[in-house]
Amino acid sequence: MQLTVRDLVEMPQLKIRPIAGENGLGRTIEWAHTSELEDPSAWVLPNYLIMTTGLGIPKHQKKQHDYIMRLINADLAGLMISDEMNAPDNLSKLIEIADAHDFPVLFINYHVPFIEVAKIIIEANKGKKDAVNNALVNLLYDHTKELIKEHDINALLERVSVLLNLPIYLMDPIDPTIPLFNLAPLPESVHTTIKKTPLTLKEVQKIYQPSAPTLHMIPLQAQDLLLIVIDNSINHELMQNLAMLFSLCLENRKETCYQRFRLSSDFLDDILNERVSSAYIEQKLPNFKIDMEQTPCYAVITTLEADHHYLKQFFKYNVSGMALLKKGRLFLITEAPHIDTLTGLFAQLGISDPIVEIKRIHDAFQEAMLAYKNSSPEYPIQHYSNQNYATHTLPRSLEEAERIFEFNLGALYEQDQSKNTRYLHTLKAFLENDRAWEKTANQLHIHKQTLVYRIHKVEEITGRKLNSTADVVELWMALKAGEILGHIIE
Image (cartoon, rainbow, N blue to C red):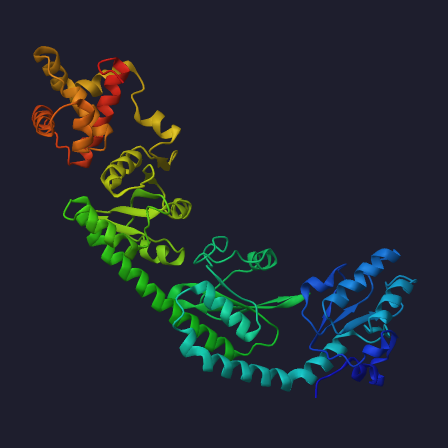
């Protein structure tokens, strides 16, 4: 039978007497907590008994009203005050409100330590807690087949938490501040407690809190993550079942994520080498969680260290898109919301301007490459359009501009001057129009075949190919240098 407040009052050895709320002595007691806070209700659960020496009880009548109402609204079992210690002499307002709500307020003889009360409550509830844990294990087992199909980790956490009526969280022990899988951040109180404790993935850790339920840190070793369960009475079997459930779900989700990125690698290689049509690209992009019409995308380039497990990080931090690893360099297309996450995962990045249509993918990677080449330990994250980026890529003097222009476009400029051709003007228009043949020809008021001929001559004279990312980047910067020098009209 469940222990009640009346049961404690009727134990002569405890020397307890009720001073208010005697009509509520039938309230059941789940647990007891010592607290000297002005608001102990924030740290306990329903049916908990608050034990205090009275330090946290206000003297002011209005504050006494607020104090006792917080306990009443938290649906606690009652308030036990150590007699003749630190409580205010005048408790009339507290008693008045407690009586009005049938909320038990008790005095206990100051010679009786609170630990004696706690022992009685623990022993009385021991059998009940075992029964509850067994019931929870069976409940979890009955729902495992359904839950294990859940690929949304956020939804899984919520469903299990509601099912078992327990607060449950997932955390990365390496950096608890970064939310996993788009989950909500850990509650500040939990995060503050965890910061004080060295964490391990080898065994279950218990973090005891003086005025709040115990934190159980359950390792999910395969994913290097911790499952946090907040409860005073959870047993080992239930923790094992929770660890198994979340490990299986996370493993299934991880394999799906890894497979999607492996497929994306070949597809992105086909795109960059122009082996697939725009129509085919548009058809396949949704498979990789990319929707350029709804969300702007970016091309991102970085270099990986040999031991950098980028897929594992993409999985943990819910990064989606397409990725190609080539000669130690990672090429990535991802949607805008993931950019902030990526800046925290890699030492240096080059980021393009937004990609809002498929035909810009090639140019975006040229932009990302140019940005990346200008990243440094001092400026690790470079955006193509960023002002800091521009100051580090444009020529910093007329002499430098002249050298860049002469080396890359000197022969083409000489041809225009001596033969009265328009190759520089044609090249500038072609690149500004994202190498679109029809659009450039219309702008220049020439036939498309004439444009094809001119671009062929540009490639021949400069020795560069306009389907090469590196060559286009160098020609583009040389054009900018020519504008600075006045050789090219903007």
